[in-house]
Length: 179
Image 1 (cartoon, one colour):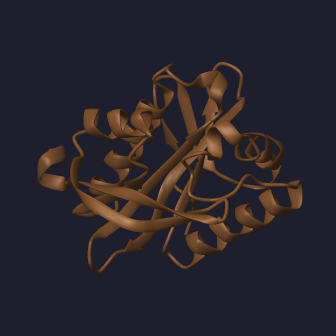
Image 2: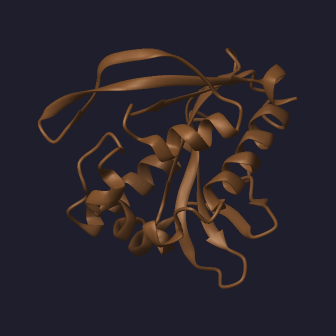
Image 3: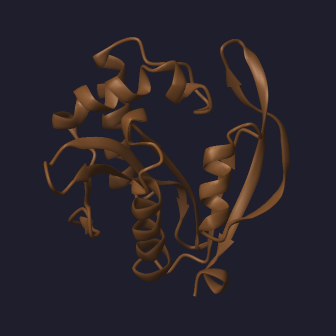
């Protein structure tokens, strides 16, 4: 099955793959990015490559899709976003994304997420998209709420990061809410 490339006014969303390892490592090795990511910062490009391969395997098994977020004007890698925990028969998945701090506040994450949601509800015919975020991750919470997500509740000690447990808020968006 061919990977579903997507396009917005300013972005290309293509499969996260080995050519993106430098940019992916640059983003996920930063404390300011991983502070609310749910995992510790990456220490090596080999770790980034392992994660990229894991995303490719998840796609092959139809349980995940991870796109590279690329600027149209320069073809520059600025982040990634996609779906995990895809359960096609149950018509649900979780969404996640990361963006290089140089591009925070630019609307790129919103633009990419909108296109991923359009694909999810349209092409994949999913009904529910979930998201888990740190309660203090106000930027992601605001973005998800602007997309129409509703907060459902607190997941106690959901993330284990930097040798301690952290709570997570769970949010969801239903196809009926999106339409």
